[in-house]
Image (cartoon, rainbow, N blue to C red; front, side, top):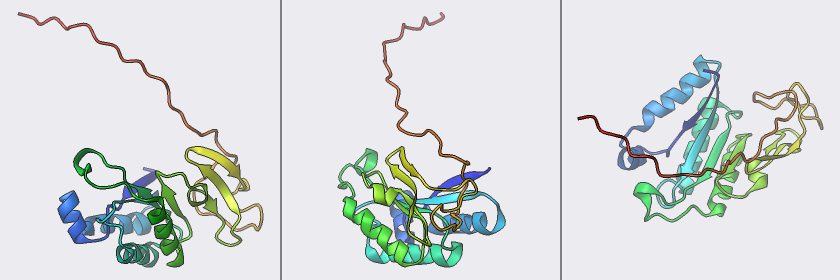
Length: 191
């Protein structure tokens, strides 16, 4: 396995027990294992659910743990919740909650913190941790800027950006394809 995106659902045992019917500790152990025992490139995603795992204290604790145990270069994504399936009675995550979470994580020393499931080009772009220049501009799935040298360094100051990159920007973007559904023919039943 070359890469992984690990969902860190929340940062309390209560959240994992009540909403995930699981435990937090094995997820944290897996993250530490990936960081210290493998060469797998991994990123962390936390879906922030209003009133469940979006408190300032919980985001501060998660950010401090990531910084202390994994270091400043593991990307952390805070994504917006939208009501669906078993959580239809919870409201969507306000964009400001994600922006505050991103600021908390960056203030804790994390270099690559992103917002997701909202329109936020600044929070979705990769910035040089040394000079602040936009290295990879993103707007949803579209790449809007590419300022990395072929070796993954900032073209403005030469600082290495942690990650796995191609020498030039890929042709990403929305890839939705129209799909037409039609009724299928009944399948004969053997007697």
